[in-house]
Length: 111
Length: 115
Image (cartoon, rainbow over all chains, first blue to last red; front, side, top):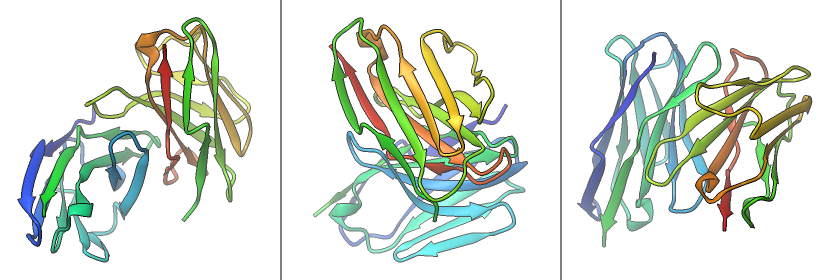
């Protein structure tokens, strides 16, 4: 059974800092991995999708990496802003099409 | 990327009533749709998998008679929460895929509050 763990559970940083969120998964036989952002009371916003054959994806200040063999992914946020404050979820999609989500990292960026 | 919509985005209902949530794939045909539920401060959990034209497959612990799923077309799946109770208050998210092994595209979610 696939298990997804996100560390840390919560993170508070001052504005402008670069930061890394971590996601680990137990079964490396994945189809893809997605990083989502969730604002309080709101739905999911897909940030980056990494296919199993890829090693990283970039969008603006965000960079996500994937190391299937070690069961790890990181989400790097450069020059953090208060507007980045949210919960970040990673989800691993297995070949059967189902996704397993981590519990998320709640990020607070202080002005 | 592909777009998946959900309606309504928020719904408040009285205990004992039934609520229907729609999930639509707007620009692709979704052979498979998934329904997830998220309780406060918890991660999303898969409730069921539905394939167009066939009965949904429910995850362990999910009551199929309470959470009715219909996937009658390649662009629409519905989740009906029957006889809703306050403990059913949750965030419900659907995702859609062109096939069982294809990338899932997630809807924005529906916040259900049962009074």
